[in-house]
Image (cartoon, rainbow, N blue to C red; front, side, top):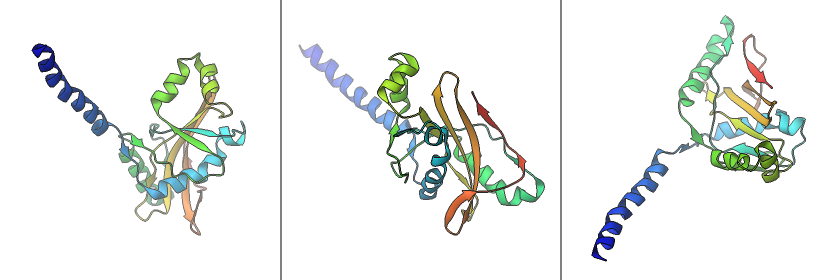
Length: 193
């Protein structure tokens, strides 16, 4: 009995330490208010909203990113370059999103574990059973801004089936207090399946 008590005393601090370490080592909360304005502006143009007519969006709660492939033409480097640099810096780590996206449709922020567990129940069929009328799930990066926060660079992707998905970079600028797509020239990349 005394041995059992000693084992409990030794293991309880270890259990607490693991739980606390997981919270500390997990993604930090993404606090950038302007980023949520950017997400709010872009989401209605994404496939789950526009094509699949999702009734409720599913957004991955932890940011993802894509290797930077934007290469602005020379005359655009000074304008877009700083936002690209910040995108690269911020997306060296993951961030945890807050429920601050302002869109007309309801949405859920779901953890990567929630998404994985939906696939444990029969792949995409299991996902759509758990998240019906979602059009799949959306992933966003942290947003890179220039110094005065008038230019933004963000990556957004959607995953909707075995051979269904796509992702691309968006470059926006703030015009009359609103984020709008920036018509710029240069190299970009996207993917689709």
